[in-house]
Length: 266
Image (tube, rainbow, N blue to C red; front, side, top):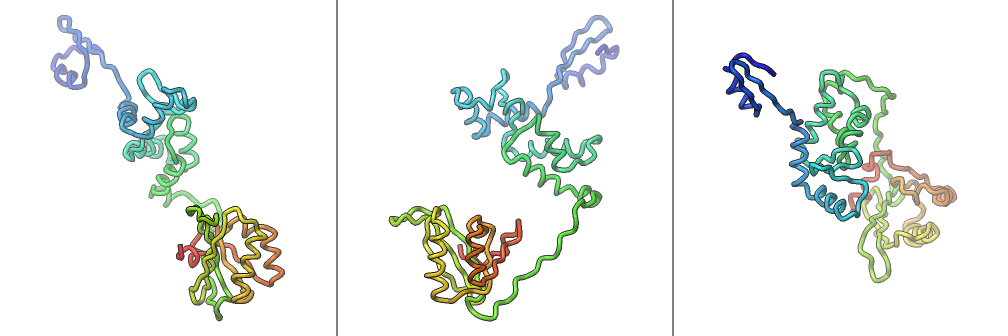
């Protein structure tokens, strides 16, 4: 930049501009550095997870991440964004609200940001950010049929005719090798059985336990509500209850509250 007015000297110095003055001519040069990249680099040094990744890279234990000459940590060719909400929000805000961006949806935003930035649960954060955009919620049309209304479960008329069940897993192993609990709840009286089991118990074993502990005491239920555990959705389990005359009701997808009476016992 060549300037013939020396009055701009003070303002240019505030911008960290280098000057070369010859007579009435002022030659100014300015090096532009992306402020966002600098902020990410500084925040990386304070992020414990990314520092751990840097250490693993330096020790040769991780070939997925690389360290640039300036110390910036990359995941492949993507900049690793530290766990700083302001930084991540700034990146998503620029992508979503830029004049030529036209408010992209979460899938488009992820495809735009994915080649350049990376952080854990990035796709989830982008979807949540996009869902908070009032303009998108008001203007964008829904491209799927409207969902129906939720229907409450019918009120049982007699005890232990309608039950719910679920598993509590990930428990410390007992001296008898039990590491899970099978919770079976009566929807009317809220009374429950807590049956110790092993996570790797076969369906034959669970069926035998169900008959000896539940059917023997309370009879065959009319209906059972449970989540979509693979053990409950198996052909064997369906065939067993079809033979017993019990109706099986699976919880609504992404709505675990359907089986809330079992989960409330956890």
